[in-house]
Image (cartoon, rainbow, N blue to C red):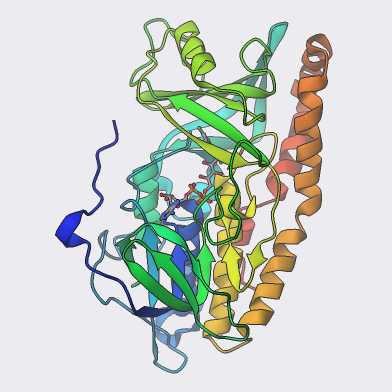
Length: 421
Ligand SMILES: Cc1cc2nc3c(=O)[nH]c(=O)nc-3n(C[C@H](O)[C@H](O)[C@H](O)COP(=O)(O)OP(=O)(O)OC[C@H]3O[C@@H](n4cnc5c(N)ncnc54)[C@H](O)[C@@H]3O)c2cc1C
C-alpha cells in the first residue's frame, strides 16, 4: 500500500501571490524531465559549469536532497539574475507510481538514472491462444523503481523549488506576449511567464479537460506481487498476451522487476473494466493479486501548446498508442520543452516563438503516432490465428530489428545527449 507522505494541515502554507519565472505543474516523468533540462540549460550557458553536456552531473549524483523547501532559486549565468523555477504536484515527488515502469535501457542511461534499475529485460514474448513467440530485441527494456527514478531526476534539477499543491485550473487567459499566466491551486494562485502542464492524461490546464469514458483514453491496472510464485518461470523477458478472453481490445503484461512482478491488463476501450481480468491473469500466473495501481493513459496525440501553456507527456497525448508506452516520450518531449524554455530565459526568443517551435516539434511526430494508432485498431480485429502467424514472422531476426529499431527511433535516447538546436 502507498504510504502517504504529502504535507497536510499547518505545513501547507499559502502560495497565493507567488510569482515565478517557470511553473511546472506535475512532478512525474514529464515534469521532472523539464526541470532537469532547465538546470542543464543553465549549466550549459554557465562558463564556470563546463560547456559540454557530458561534464554535467549524471546518474543522479547527489546534487542535493529531496525535497527542497523555501526560496531556493537557480542562477541563470547570462546576466546573473536568479531564475525562479517552481514545481508543483499533489503528492510528494516519487510518492505515487501509476506505471509498470519499464523503459528502453538506453533512455535510463541517457537520463542519468541507472541507479533506479531493478531488472534488465533483453527479450519480449508475445502470446496468443494459439502460441507464443520470443524475440531478442535490438535494445533491452529495464524495469525500474519509480521513487528512485524520481529522486535521480530531481537530484539533477538544480535549485528548482518543489511544493505539494493540487492544481485546479487557469485563472483567465494568457494575455498574449510575455504576460504572466495565473494558475489556481488549492494553496492559492501562482503566476508565471512560462507554464508547463505535465499533469497527465486529464490536461488540467486546458478547458474542457479530458474526461473518460468519452475521450481517446485507454485504461490500465496492474498488481505487484512481491516474489515470483514457486516454480514460476523467470523469463528475463517482458511478457505480453494478446487474448480476447483476457481483454477484448488491448493486451496484458508481466514485467519482472527484481524482487517483484508487475502484472496488468490494458484496454484501449475506456468503457471496459480491467480489474477482473487483471486478477484472473495474476491467478493464472500463480501470483498474488496485491498492491493494485492503475490509471488512464491517452492513445492520441494532442496539441502540445494551448493559450500560452506548454503541455508535455500524457497531457499532450505523448503516450504511444498500441504499446501504451509513455515514459520515454515524456522524457523526450520534456527535454524538447525544457530547451525551448531555456531559449526564452536566455533571451534568445519570446515566449510565443518558443510555443510555436515546441508545438511544431511535437506535431512533427504525428505520423508515427498515427501509424501506431492504426495498428492499435487493426490488431484486435485480426483473426487470432493470423495474428499468431504474423507474430511468428516478426520473431525472425531481421524483422524484429527493423520494427523495434523504427519504434525506438521515434523518440531516440540520442536526443537526450545531443546539443540543442
Ligand atoms: C498500469 C499502467 C502501466 C504502465 N506501464 C508503462 C510502462 O511500463 N512503460 C511506459 O513507458 N509507460 C507505461 N504506462 C504509461 C505511463 O505511465 C504514462 O504515459 C506516463 O506516466 C506519463 O507521464 P507524465 O509525467 O506525463 O504523467 P503522469 O505520470 O501521470 O504524472 C502526472 C503527475 O501529475 C500529478 N497530478 C495530476 N493531477 C494533478 C493535479 N490536479 N494537481 C497536482 N498534481 C497533479 C500526478 O500526481 C503525477 O505526479 C503505464 C500506464 C499505466 C496506467
